[in-house]
Image (cartoon, rainbow, N blue to C red; front, side):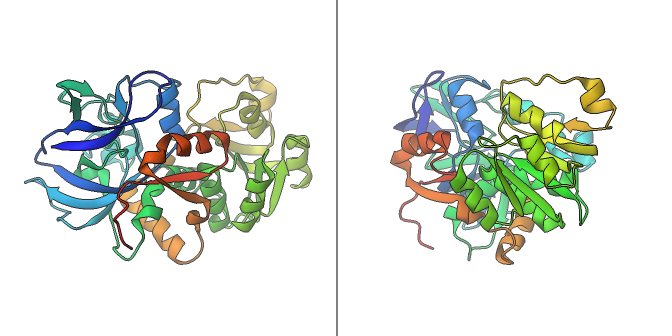
Amino acid sequence: MKITAAVVDEKGGKFEIRDDIELADMQPDDIQVKMVSSGICHSDEALRKGDAVIGYPIVLGHEGAGIVEKVGSHVQNFVPGDHVVMSFYACGNCDNCLKGIPTQCLHYGENNLSGVRPDQSAHFTENGEKVLDMFDQSSFTTTTVVRERNAVKVDKDLDLRKLAPLGCGYVTGSGTVLNTLKPRPGETIAVFGTGAVGLAAMMAGKISGCTTVIAIDVVDERLKLAKELGATDTINSKNEDVVEAVKALTDGRGVNYAVDTTGVTSVMENSILALAQGGVSACIAVTPNHIDLDTWNNLCVDDRSVIGVNMGDSIPQIDIPRLIKFYRAGMFPFDKTEKLYKFSEINEANADSISGKTIKPILVIDEDYKF
């Protein structure tokens, strides 16, 4: 069937909305989803500009929310009319999936970052030529086909325009804290960068019972929002020495945990230098940048650790409903970071994301959707 999709034809190219994209036929474990909305994530931008590469032409988008239209013959958990949020695909059968760590699925790359299905067939074609996909999903479309394990059912009394970023940005930031760092009540955390991922990590720190939750950025408006969402302290790193400021807020010790969402070399390094003895820094940005550390003085002597975390070590079918429960309880007001754009405004929305004007842009793909 013909659909409308936003296509990037070349490295650094703009999104072009085209209505001649052919959607592949469904396979037995597929569901067909009419898209309502999609978040724009910095990972989309990394692929668009070539910091991380799958190839071109490509349909990006991996924070989709929509309504199930059709289900394949092997699908067990969804029926037409279900509301879903979409996330990454994990096979469910490899050793790591069976251990309950789908973000470390041994087939993660071929399923999410190859641009095609594992059998090398394409989700999308244009004039008979392959158009690559992202995350086995590609949510910058009016309709898409995903496998059952990509989707998470959500209650129909929730606004699908708000929920889309739960599939990546919000689950990545919160999961890094709740699933991986696991701070105990009374411990301390600093979050470097207050975009959607950073604010999600910060709110998760508060939920975990951290008594010092430090938000760090260079934009005062973002730091003001961070305070509103639960930061106990804020630091504008443009105006003061971050490491010294963090230590001043923690009796000279540094924080137990840090999360860097910026991918900027100096900021990643500061997230490590601001740690207390035995502290852990999670560097989770998609970035081509590297860090330079004196492992003896910066790591070994103080027994510090630096880790990477993929997708918040999340199990979407567990973590997304948990975040919705926190949201309903007023503990995770993620929608305060969002701004809605029309699908036709995708390039403007992406530019606002890059500049920091909008923390989390949401493309409303189905403007007829009623909540």
